[in-house]
Amino acid sequence: MQKNLDTAKKNFSDMNTETLLEEWALHAEDYEPEALDLLKRELLSRGITPADLDQAAKDAAHETPEPGEADVIASFDSLVFARQAQDILAQKGIESSLQGLESAVWGFDAAAAVPGPVDLVVIKRDAEAARAALQEFTPAAEEREGVKLEEPPPEDAADL
Image 1: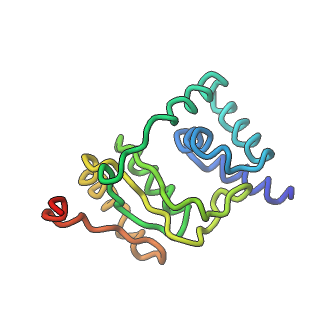
Image 2: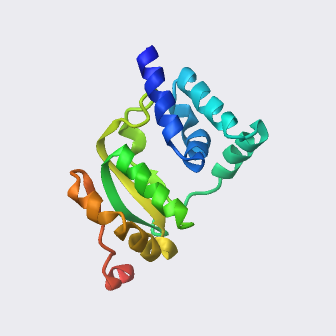
C-alpha cells in the first residue's frame, strides 16, 4: 500500500496546479481517502487555501455542455497522454474535459493505463483552436501507440 501512496504522491507532484484542482473538484470521489489526503496536501503546499478548494468544487458543479455543444477532438488509451493534451489546451486558455474515465483505474495510481479510450472534449466554438493547439503536440503524440486525433466533422454533418 505504501508503494501505491508513493506513486500517487509522485504523480500529484508532477501535475500542474490547475490539473490538481480539477482532480480535486471533479474526481475527488474516485480516490481512496489516503490518496485524496495526499492530493489535498499537495494543493495546500502550493498555496491553495481550503477556501480555494471549496470554490473549485462549487465552480466544477457548473452545467456540462449538452450533447451537440461539444466536440471530441482526440482519443487516448493512456490517461497520461490525455492529461498532457489537456494541459496543452489549458496553457492556450481552452477549457476541456475528459470523457470515458468511468472504466479507468483510479485510487492510488493516477497515471494508470485506461482500459478503454479517454476522449478529450471541448466546446464546439473552441474546437478549431484546440485542434490547432494539439497539432504542436501531435507529431510526437501520434507516433505513440494509443493516441488518435479526431478529424473535424464534415461541414454538412451539422445539418443532419
